[in-house]
Length: 196
Image 1: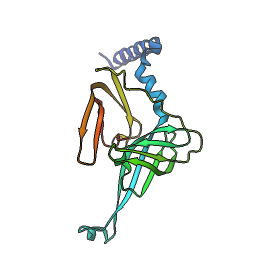
Image 2: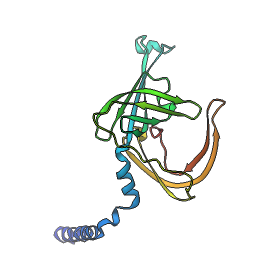
Image 3: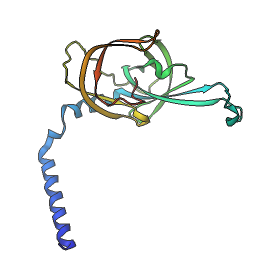
Image 4: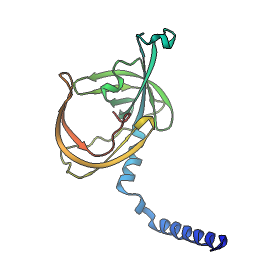
C-alpha cells in the first residue's frame, strides 16, 4: 500500500470516528462526568510546609533546620472560605496554602480539629464567594454503587479516580488515639495527596 493510500485510509477512519463522536452527542457526558464537572470548583489542593529541628544529619544541610513539604485535599464547606480536610494533612505544620480550581493560592489558618476523627477545618480569605460542595447522606448507599474522588494525588491537582462502594460500616483503629468508625470502603485509587 502506498503512503497516499494509507494516509487516505487513516483520514477516512478519523472522519468516521469524529462523526460517530459528534453523533454520540451527550452520551459521552455520563453521570460521572457531570458529577466531576459540578464538584470540581469545590475541591481545593492543600500544600503544607514545616521546619524540622536540627538532627544528626544536620551537617548535610549546613547545620540548618530542613523544610518539609506535604500535600492534601480539601472540600469547601462554606462560601466564606471554610474548608474541611484531614487533621493529619495539617498536623504540626507551619504554613498551609490552598490552591483553588482557578489556580489562585491563598494562605490558610487552622480553625479547629479533631485528632481522633482525623478532621480539621481551615479558613482562607477568598477573593469571591466559593462554591460549596453539596453534602449528601450515606444512609442509602448501596454496595457496588459507583463512586469517584477528586484530589491532589501525588501533587497532581484535581486528579479524578473512580470505583465502587466495596463495603459499608467499617471500623478501623489506627492506635490508641486515632480511630475511624462507620467508614465507607471503596476500591477507587486513593493515593498520597488525596487525603482530605
